[in-house]
Length: 170
Image 1 (cartoon, rainbow, N blue to C red):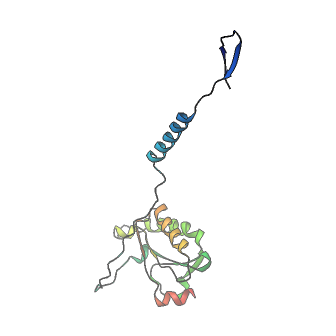
Image 2 (image 1 turned 90 degrees about the vertical axis):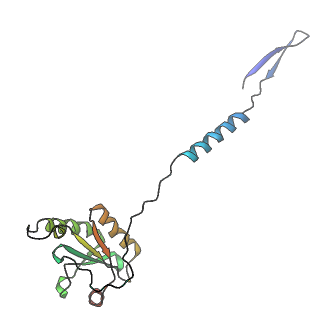
Image 3 (image 1 turned 45 degrees about the horizontal axis):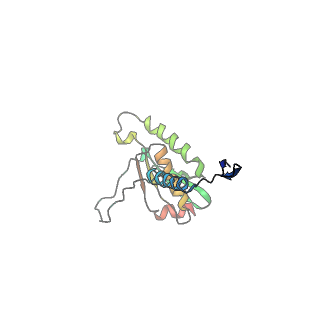
């Protein structure tokens, strides 16, 4: 602390301690903290846009290109059932863990890109159908949606399971 020597009338010097008022400094500090808190941008929540279909009934069902389509069915315990194209028989359904989804997508993407030129332009793009089961966790569906974003899959949809798929995953 600073000391100040002050002369007195009788010739002796008396030592006085100097007192500094820090109230304005504290006020300035809080003003700066408030200013920076209000002017900085915090982490914005990331969200994906999902276009949902209308509830109006249609005469014709949605068609898809079976050579360029893979269907993922997340089930319980972070397992993943999947098949390529349309489900025709039991041998086509395959089972793996959720961690293998990226490998499956990349492998199928390379197969779709290698299709002959006589296929349409949309046939050379991967189409993914995600059909969550009743026993899957929300986290698994979000993970699959993240994989669509990471692997730049532009055509994907979330659909309900049909009876044949429900019977196969049980």
